[in-house]
Amino acid sequence: MAADTHRVIETVWRMEAPRLIASLARIVRDVGTAEELAQDALVAALEQWPESGVPDKPGAWLMGTAKHRAFDLLRRRKRLDRKHEELGRELEIQQAAAPDLDASLDDHIGDDMLRLVFTACHPVLPTEARVALTLRVLGGLSTEEIARAFLVGVPTAAQRIVRAKRTLAEARVPYEVPTRDELPARLASVLEVIYLIFNEGYAATAGEDWVRPGLCEDALRLGRILAGLLPAESEVHGLVALMEIQASRLRARTGPDGQPVLLLDQDRGRWDHLLISRGLAALDRAERLGGALGTYTLQAEIAACHARAPTAGDTDWERIATLYDALAQIAPSPVVELNRAVAVGMAFGPAAGLELVDALRAEPSLRSYHLLPSVRGDLLRKLGRFAEASAEFEHAAGLTQNVRERALLVERAAACARRVQLGGA
Amino acid sequence: MRVMVLVKATAQTEGGALPDERILTEMTKYNEELAKAGILLAAEGLQPSSKGARIRFEGKKRTVVDGPFTEAKELVAGFWLWQVRSLEEAIEWLKRAPFADGDEVEVRQVFENDDFGEAFTPELREQEERIRTQVTAKR
Image (cartoon, rainbow over all chains, first blue to last red):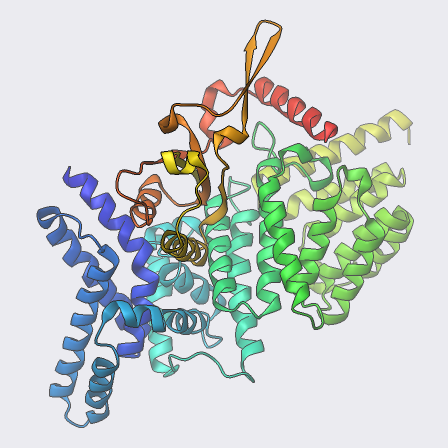
């Protein structure tokens, strides 16, 4: 029974933690302190609820307890340092403005959540720290879970979070929603974090598991929350669309023995049509908002081309090539160029694709990127140049850190090598 | 993980009466909360069983029985599909739903492929894939 209550408490706390931290940070003006206060409320619940039973409104109980402690803390600070009078004034304003907890929750929670999102993803923090802090304060993940998700030790994950909080405090990052002028850059930082979390789950960069779907679900959830908070920002819907459509393929991406199955070989009957329709709806919202299409919306458009095709053979590669072209205009990168080469190869033949890939071979940033030789190998294979193809697949296998992917590439290299022997070339 | 929340039919839902405005408002607010938390995947309400039918399979015979069906408690009046981290989370969300006195709501876990474990051998899975492909091909 006690164990059951503990699970209920932990579940409720995890559900409430982001809102708790968001509101507390407005009072104490520091995300680190807010998170500690929220933790204190969890400890209080663990002490009291097994005896008293779980309250009718557990969220309000946690918020009430935590806010009480926050105000205590402010009073202590005020007593300790009379010079900080403005804190006391602030405290009075806070108390006067929020006499009813439930009402204040409804009024402020949206803004507070946004403040928390923008603070946790503040550009002053290194990317890794932003990701860890976001999962911690917005995703409600424990340090252990974050460590496991990113294949690092618990002390490393803990340190990332501690350092992130310290950096925010030292840089005196205001707990605010960015102004209109700042918004595009600050939003880009938030979207980047969410998509990084998604990708970490979608294509694990290292280790045994090809997919860690838990992280994909966390990222999707964060994206949907953000779409609710910023409904007028088309790129938020674009990112949600992209993630929903990509997630729709999760269960088709691995074969029975856990080996990866590439997009065009996937059984489309196994795609999740609920997620596809949600993704297409989000894409529609993004485009209805008007304006030039952003990078996430364009990528979602590309993903949608695949999602709409009943079979791999029905894929509109010309449209995909055009979309990559548009993407390369606003976000030029060798990786985008490589993807464009793939689409061009499919739309206009492998020779056209190979021409674009060969132009990328001197690109220093792609030197250790396994997909370059992998794509080149595929185009060479289609052109019947099996010996060169086999060498490219071998090269790619040596570059990837993912065990499953390496096996797939080794297999493709061997298949091409067999064709060389058969052809006697 | 995903759960399906099954809302059972009552005399009112089977009578085809729409919920009153207060309940409708509360339910809309609740659905908004679910959406804002990022867990709501789908939500649908079903029309009374008088507008539905059942098909009974006996050997090669197919018997169609038109609604209504009597055992209201066994009937489903609506459902949600949620994406949650645990059954506990689903239960905690459900406790906050604005249902009336005497209502009963069921929460069930959706099978993920991994749940089939050893019994779901590669051959079986392959067969299932073939079946799914056929289904898709017919669409």
